[in-house]
Length: 54
Image (cartoon, rainbow, N blue to C red; front, side, top):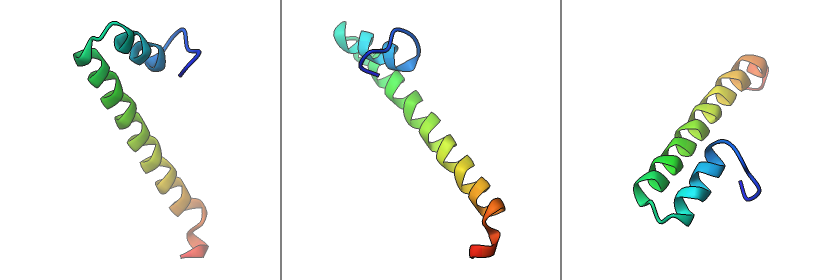
């Protein structure tokens, strides 16, 4: 995120530099939702591929 020129990380950095709190909160919320979706998908994949462990 620190050296980003494009994407959500760059959007968050730009919003923070411009003190645009509404955009900053929207970017962080979007990043959080993406993280939750990825964690959910990894959990589903883990249950399917490692069913013998449960």
